[in-house]
Structures are given as structure tokens and as C-alpha cells.
Length: 262
View 1 (cartoon, one colour):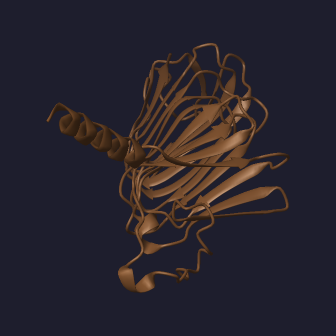
View 2: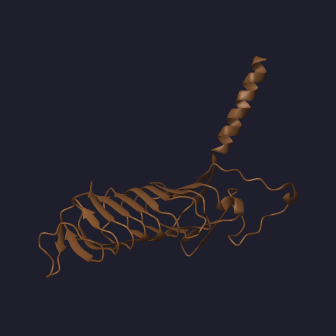
């Protein structure tokens, strides 16, 4: 009886472990960019110091009984990862696409090198939740329709173009090499950065307000009151932090903008 119980526990453990250990590794080599598309489930990007792309999922994929011996056909390409994804590489760009209907709704974590650029196309109307990015030191770009993005402990550059979604960013430091564009139409933008950051800001919120505890030197219009300490919606605000630095264009049509010091 004890032997049977032990065997059952081992089988349960192996089943549980396999459920959460599906992964695929791709050697990045000299590639400069990773493009992720045709997915609607949760997407998480994590930076690392290594030189490989690691993809992990907790979802399982089983062919229907009638499909045994057949391959699924998809506009995203053939599943060449056994995770429901197609990976191809052309001209230094690694393309990762959902290759089956089941995979397009699955959740994936992508662990990527910190010296590579990442683009996420999350513009499907059926996306599941906010995209998450953590501990990433490379360039990040995203297009989104109905969900937002949360970036924590990043350096940028950042290029965000959202329709309906909030944007939350926490910079460990702000990359000075390239101008940044952070935009949403229907959503709030909340950005935290070190107080010593050097930046030139172009801020705009048509139907919202702009708030900050950073020591931004604002370029005021001549007809504005010198005592104004925050700026209402339909005004474009220009200013610099610590004498100026990288250009940061931050705008929302229907939402407030918050700039915080870390």
C-alpha cells in the first residue's frame, strides 16, 4: 500500500512538473531584435545577461485524435518549437508568432538578452491583459489596442503606442541614446525615474492633467500665470530636468500623466 501511495505521488509530481516546465531555447547569436506577434494571452518579458532567448509556458498542446500524423496549418507558420509557436530569423530579426489557435490564447514568458531590442504587437481586439516587462535593459516597443503595459526596472529606450490602456513605467536609469515616445489615447500614464535623470520633456494630455514631484524647469507661455504649479488638459507642456537630456514625448488624450521621482 505504501509503495502504491509513493508511486501515485511521484506520478502526480511528474505531471505537475511537466505542466510548468515546457520551454524552448533559441540562440540569439548576432540578432538585433525580437518581434512577438499573433498572441492574445498573457505576455511577460524578462531581461537577462545571457545570449539566448528562453520561452516558457504552463499550457499543454494536444492534437485532436483525428489530427494524429498531421501538422496544423496557420498563417503564423508551422509550430517548430513544440510550444505552439513559430520562430524564424531574417536579417537579424527573430520573429516569434503564434502558430495555432490554442497557442494564441496561451500565456508565455520570454527571457531575453538585455542587449537586444524587443517589439510586441498586441493589437488584436482579443488580448487578455497588460503586457509585463521586468529587469530589461534594452529597447522596448509595443503597439496595443485594448490592454496596457507595465514596465518595471527598465532603462529604455521605450516606444509605446496604445489605444485603450494604461502605461506604468519604473526606470532604474534612463537611457540617453535615443528619444522616447510614450503615448496612449484612452489611458493614464504613470512614470517613475531617478531624480538625477537628464531629460527634455514634451507632455500633452488633452482631457486630463499633468502632475509631477520632479524638479522640472517648465517652459511657460508668456500669457500664463507664473504661479501655476500643474497644467490642465489642452496644453502642451515643455520642460527639462537637470538641464536637459534625452527627449521624452509623453502624451494621453483621455487620461492624466504622472511623473514621479524614485
